[in-house]
Image: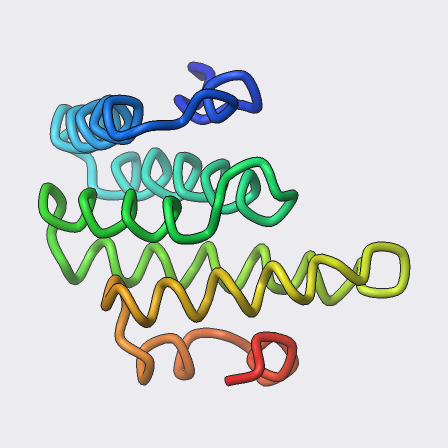
Length: 141
């Protein structure tokens, strides 16, 4: 399995050019595979790494949402929305588990969720449908 595009090193100098590289990389990898489950796996992995960088403060949340929005122009809206909700659920569950030792994750989670919704990258109803009640509470939704 290849290294994801997003790493701590790659987000250190994040800019519009890097955002475009990410979008091109991910959309290219997703469209290159014929198997839908493999495509989903690639997308989920790349989105997870991107959201993780936001969660730990390595990538500003507004830049993260802009990147997701740009990716949404290249990948099916339904696919990208569902994948974002899946990954938001996962990083949310991780934040809930770690809220005692890393309380700052709650604020990151809420901020990321708000940026995703304000950039209209994912529909609020879909987020509420696919994310657990506990995570929704942590997101303040």
